[in-house]
Amino acid sequence: MQISALFRLMGGDGTELYSEVRQLSKSQQISRGLKQYNPKLHSILDKSKRPDKIVFKPNGQKNPVTGEDILVEDTEPVSRIPVAFQNYIIKQKATFAAGNGVHLKPSKEGSKLFDYISTNWYDNKTDYHIYDIFRQVMAYTEAAVIFYGERGAERFEDFRYKFKVVSPEKGDTLEPIFDDDTDDMIAFGREYTLTIDGKDVARYDLYVTNEQGFVEIRRYENGAPLLSFSDEHGEPTYIFRTPYTKLPVVYWSQDAPECDITSEMVEEFEIALSDFVTTQYYSADPILFGKGSVLNLPAKGSPGKFIEGSADSELKFVTPDNATESRELQFRMLRDFIFGLNRAVYLDIETMKALGDVSGVALKYYLVDAYMEATSKQKGYLGMGVQRMVNWMLHEWKELTGLDKDLRIYAEFSQYEIDDAKSKIELAMKANGGLPVMTHASSITYAGLEEDSVLALETINKQGKGD
Image 1 (cartoon, rainbow, N blue to C red):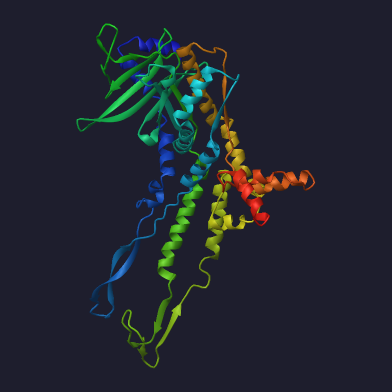
Image 2: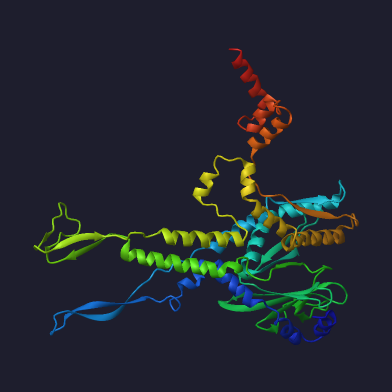
């Protein structure tokens, strides 16, 4: 949309503006992502796509001519087993992408403005939210944060810009509006549902910058402008003018759900697994096959079982010769392709046992694809969104305080990794020819088993002298 067209629509009564911006939803991708991420919504559970098995059962009556049982059509339930591959992979990838948190680095030290922003950032527990934002973007293709200022603070030290995470997972419909020429986001719409007096009400908030350069919130209810604010003359209006000069919204999106490329493979895995389990119900436990006439059978659970039969009778157990090998190969190949194409790592108990004796360096090599994927997202659209959060806070804090107009702040991710102290120490000793790299006192502090490492060292020395 051209920004000039947006300004033109803002000049009306709000009805045409609402109608125009409501055509921008990503509902198709979001629906697909929801069905993939939630295993309860997988198609394997759809009885219309995987119907019960048709069987024929005796109805308890005999054919008067042949004496055989009369069979009637019936159904037997089949196994329907969803597998939460997408859920597992997305949570793992979000963990790697979020890393061990974000470090804020100022362009100059000793800045009071940076102190305000850094305190604000960590008081908001932003690192914890970043993982959840990344997870929701990967699962549902989009998420956003909306900033707002706390009320009641009288000093800068007490003031905080808070934010709210919104996404399809929370029931929100997100509608960003971008300038056709610059691709900058010039407005943002959010539809959400409130329960008022026992009734669900559809609210829609449109964040847009007016021609004077201030952000307005235009509110609608059930498609009509909601006169819930007051203008400068005390008259009711649907427009609330904020003090912000930048949209208080950071929006993330991706073209398709994170595991969309392997969705058909997951369906094949679920079908194969469900077929296998259904077959197991028929043949996994030994089947007793009888030939001839059996005069009596033991009751269920009776001790000292004895079966009596006629002279031509024969009983034997029937078991499958090769029940699982081909299926196991099929499952393993599908699983490996699903994880490999998604650049994720399958960390089952057997893999972890095999890695138990290797060094942290070897484990890093095993996880290298996951690290590379995480880095690409941190340097790409996910990391850009985090930097935009920092930039918005920096801009508004500058406007609020008038401090350090030339300050810049950089968001730097810390890599999620397993700390392998043994490998680090061995490498350092190898580099210095086998000399120590740590004092005795430092090793006590590093172990973390003693509160006072100096006192602990004195006690150890005394014990060594036999005191």
